[in-house]
Every structure is written in C-alpha cells, then in structure tokens.
Image (tube, rainbow, N blue to C red; front, side, top):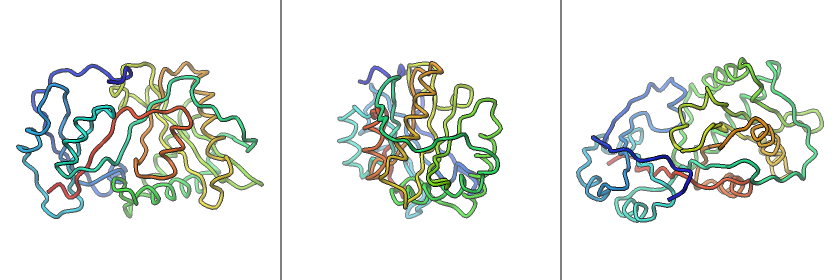
Length: 263
C-alpha cells in the first residue's frame, strides 16, 4: 500500500446512501443519488458487493461508488467483474516534485473584475470532464461555480490565479489551503494538506505550456507555505489531465469506481 494512505479503522456498516438537490454545486460532481460502499482491507469485497441493496434500476442519476487505494489491484479485479468502471482518481503530490519551469506566460492573482472569465473557464473545464462519466453539468452549474469562485476570492490569502496571453485570460487555477481543505484531509496520513480544485486552460490555447505554468506557480507557492501534500481529483479516462498531472509530480492515491445506473 502507498505510504501516504491513512490508517483503516474498523467499519461497522460499509453501506451508505446520499441524495443531493439538483441545484447544489455538489450535484455537478456526480449523480444525484449515490450508494457508497466503504472499502476496508480486511473485508471480503466480493461478498459485500453481492449483498449490496441498491436502488435506481435504469436511473442514470443513481450511482454506486466504491473508492479503493489505487494500488489495491485485487479490489480492481473484483470491481471489474461486478461491472464497475474506474473513473475518478485522488492524486497526491509531495513537495518539490514535478516542476516544468519552461514557460514565460504571465500569471497573476484573480480579481473580482476577472470573475466572468474565471467562471467561463471553469464551466468549460466542467463540460469537458462531463464526457468521462462522473461530472454532470447541471442547469445550475454556472451560477453555483460563480458563487464558489466568489467565495474563493474572499479568502484571506490569494489562492486563485490566472494565466494571460496577449492580454487575454487563457487559464485559471485555484486551490484550497488548510482550513478549507479539511474535507479531504482524511484521505492521507500527511499534514498539512492542500487541495487543487481546478486547472483549466481555454481550448484554443492548450498545448502551449499554459497549464504547466499555472501548475508550477501553484506548486511553488504551496511548497513555500510548507504544505505536506497536495491532493486533487482528475477523471481517469481524460486523455489530457491524466498524463499532465503525473508529469507534474502527482501519483494516484485513491481510485473511485462507479456503476451508473447503480443497477
């Protein structure tokens, strides 16, 4: 197992169910109704899957999710046989890893005057990711993203950055520092934890080192701040983000397997 993983306490009941409002931001990141099975190394995953009481036959907005350590290859074999697909990775980067350093693109902090451009880039990135099975762009997604980016702008330390080329915004990145990243800190034994929430580059500007420049800038700041590990999510089938993040020092820590509809 990966040394960055946390301990695995006993699990009394591995099964859970949650339901979201279609108007919430969280509804953008997956199905509205989610059955989840909490993996444990000592449990019989095949037996748990066989006895899982699932609902939502034929309903694309009801999903079954199992998140396992990415190196738990025996679990992968079991999940494949039960019709699950590996769609989402929680990846981790330790300080000093994966610096490109080859771009001279201008990076500057996000301001309130940039809100429209930032939202547009975030929506564009979300729509692209929705092709890969987890993310679901909702009618409310643009407004919820605007609210979230506005909240990020109000934080005490700058944590949102834009890339500019010839005076135009072509890339956007933001991250959560400790205090805002607590929701995901339990996924690792390392502290303190930062979470990189978005890196998006305008479609017509991709391939020119803009994403690398944003990533390098963020990683330099996070390393200087003493962050012990940076986590992020990426869609495993995404042909752009998967090779990009691993070339920038990340490695897969957890993999989320989905069956959607759940049954």
